[in-house]
Image 1 (tube, helix red, strand yellow):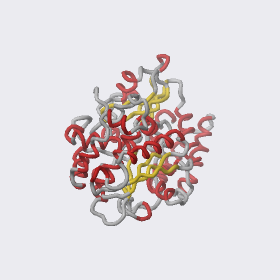
Image 2: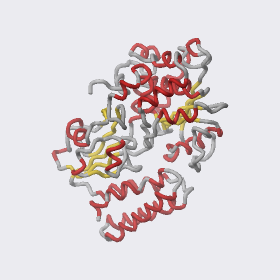
Image 3: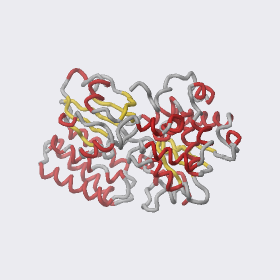
Image 4: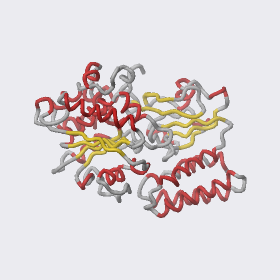
Length: 406
């Protein structure tokens, strides 16, 4: 595939913060077209495109918008840029390389659902992203793409940049909303969902950076064009963040017909130092699955990964060679979860610590297959009883790693 949907302009600008340069490279074409349509027609076009969330869950974007559109009162669009998933860096690339594409997507989303205000919630450690996006927002305002009566219409919309304080849990949409409200970033009980009761209990659409960056192209080129890329249930492209034991780690935007084998051996140049492939953690630490040599021809999309006990997640791919011990990788993952748990749910607060204790025993050679089964039992309880994905997610990497550990 020659055409890139979200990364096509990366590296093309001398100043990515410039609204004028973005327009010179085809930007701010989707917004006037969207404003010439009814909000309902914009929602239907996005729904027809089949675009699904690119932050992890893969929920249909147009369907999410349709829940908020008919509701009355003040509404918000929340861009979740709290990118804290280990091995994931795609949102930073977009915010620093093409911030106006994300901003245009937010404005179109605001028009589509009838929102008056948008927030971009950026990970606190992303200092450069915060500065660049803030300047880009101000530049968009000066050019008339934000503010009152945008492009001479009756639509008014503003965007404010907010920063996180280092908590991974705030990547979960309701914890992010709590943080935006000035509270401790704990997840909420759902339902109600943010689309109905979100920020300050008002209807709020929450979308990931990559998801929103797809919107301008869908409006300009149409849903049928977007649907022609990828598969029937996984339309469009996905940015894969590849790290680990490959010759060419980095970020790759590819249609979701690409296989794990093609990603590793064609795009990333194969295993480093010509060693043997062992496994890849696909989808990130949160709910990502370990796929082995027998899974190399699996297509990296929502439906095929689900059939192989995994998920697309954030698109992070950690590649491991024959010398890596999977138990060491699991230990690193669980250390992260122990550190980042908010402590609200007892199964998560206690379970993560207990799993890490047993993994330490296994790493030192003092554990048994029975001990690993205990880990899986704890993780299964967490999966069924915790409020948010942090507590629910360890079960997938732990269960799919079993064949290399037991």
